[in-house]
Length: 233
Image (cartoon, rainbow, N blue to C red; front, side):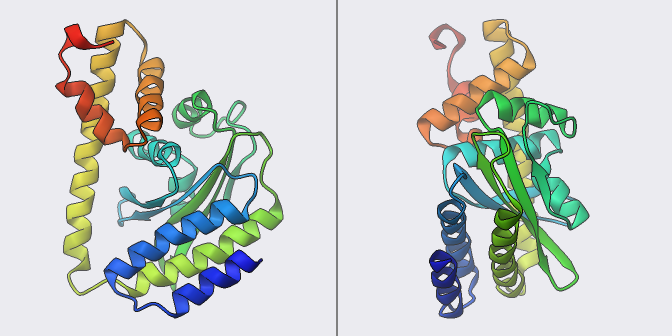
């Protein structure tokens, strides 16, 4: 548990500014992946009151892309953890009947197990934190307890570090997230048309390219839309 001790020590020594809180969330995502040995990626998401979200911390492109697809579909374990204020676990995306669209896309990219826990600050649901793994049945009750402790620290940071104009800034970030989601949807349609694939294959190809480039899914979507059809390869 030395990683947890070090993480909490860093939090206690930080000024809770908006910038430092964002840095701390990124650090805690790294700690989550390092502490939970079966995890291949970790991250945290901040939600508004309507359930629209933007990722505030991700350890890698696969996590960022998987999160972006949850926002595009409007379904997934992270959104459900936030909505229900309860821990959500997927033992195998191959057989999971909840969130079928997201599970199919995640499984196509090698994500088999998911553990997500809500970020709760007092009576406020701030967001959710999650880890992904490439093997089925990867996470245990002990892993859930560890992630819960990390999520508690993240929630304190996110809840205490918002300045007076936080609602306006969050609204702007949500608008940006919605714009990104629209671009991803259009790019998926373009790939379907160019290559004669179905929607799942097109989304999987877009997500794979995001992971390959180590860039956000929306960035790769913009690249796809800017690339003429005769140069698509």
